[in-house]
Image (cartoon, rainbow, N blue to C red; front, side, top):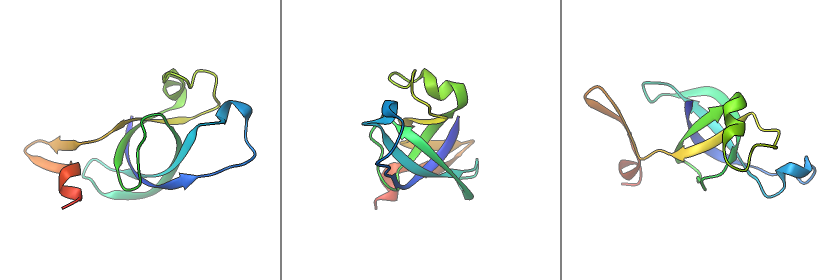
Length: 100
């Protein structure tokens, strides 16, 4: 799994029929120090994440284990919206602090 920040949405009028009704998000990856990386990923969202939220994504065959994605051609899926990340004795990310 990987941590990422939601940067935007991806809209496509022509797509595989199994992707109809699937929200696609543009994500920017985050490292273990909480630093934003110059790497992006498009992922199917099943948890209702919004712009600027930090999320947990699952990739590869694990992304197709998410309920409803079994038959979809997805390589990445948002599986959780992150509230906090603690590493050792410091907070790397806190959703409540983000909006202060």
